[in-house]
Length: 587
Image (cartoon, rainbow, N blue to C red; front, side, top):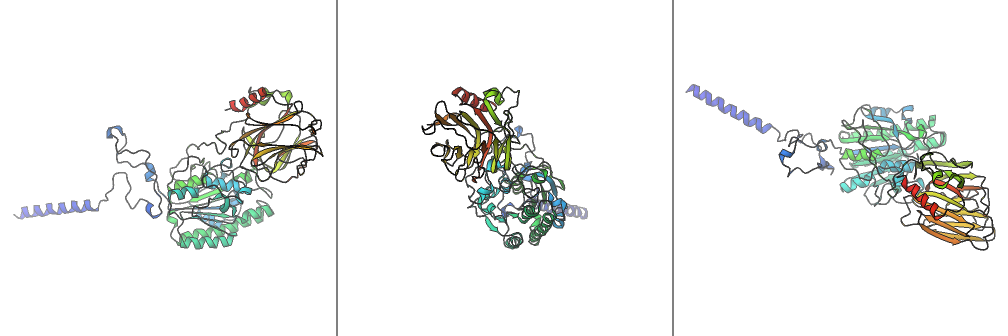
């Protein structure tokens, strides 16, 4: 009896232990983290990306993987918040001066001093790429535009703020900038983004106060006084470097505010720059201008070097950290070396605002499709392909670059932006001869009537010479002789902005008419009036591209031009067809 009693007692104790063990075991499928290990998505409104496929109706025999295996995307750690701080004009100069706060913040983080910024290396273009995930060829932002126009809320290239808002209506979003045009023309209106602007030190106080009262999903900060120091004293000078050190202290204050609120555990913290500089300016492609630092720290950030990153990738990194899919129109990507276990994929390809056009290299001599193969060498007076310079490749003309030119993606190879400069084709007089000009143009719109090409003073339409000017609704040809003038206004084709439009100007003195042809098919013509039919169209012995003949008309041509060709004589219909085939067959 005692033995039986002991046996029953032992059995009962064993059963109780088993029951207790089962009760204490988390109710979690194999390979899936427990609730303690999952991010609390509901607290910020962020959601993990769904699995690519719904396996609920799938036959287990058709699935080679473990039926309880959770997709890698679902296991990915999601951050509750991201901080992106950009120091205007700092480039990669952080490494050349004392930055004790940045050194401490990113001691276990990922960093690169070779992040490639946008071309041209100008503030609006670079901040636009950083926040919109595309190159300037897509977002089309310039310094002149962002201070005057709100960024369109229906653009196919939304900012990271808009993407977050569309995914999470309740997210707190904030942008604090010294350079207020970012808040006017780069970040869309109507998204509920808290926007504020001040000089760097007061701005920092506003940021810290905001963070202590709010928990923003995305905080964007732009400091500007480093860029001011670069413009005034020179980039890389002691004054410029000292300002970076002063800004480092402000960055430390923001980091401390997040620490004080116990936010750092679930925060991706990033510091970068929009561009660098050389001498007293920037906009070109020297290493000092085009490479910037980016440093990041967070729970899943690797300790090491970020590999092959561009500034447009910032937007992709932010969305990845928060768990949102990026728009198909973006060409940013998450780089290698930033997050643990994440390798960069193929960079997305987009036509980037060019109406479906995909850039290819300029056809080379000997290819059978070079421009002289199409029109003949003897007829081409000048050919400027704009591939990194403005040299005439075919004729004997000397060209001069005036002001600052920006070589960017063109129709073929590279083209040239003329916002801050123009090109002179010197020692050319048209006289009473027939001539043709062929060029590709891409613009988001212009103010007034800036010049495409001219040899006259465009301050007065009666002055001798000719001009072809661009307006938002048309292209205008004007010629005068001092007493008489002709004016021909050719309405632009449908949807003329943010795409490549081919323009032909044909001045046919034998036929006594002027033609403007868009995209090889839309023809507008006007007879040369009797008062000018026997007059020379000469004035200054130059053709200026992007300015009038004086070089001082003053209105900036906000456009990219490419493939400028000056042709002797008037092109025929068969010539135009051959030119159309040339530009189409290269694709």
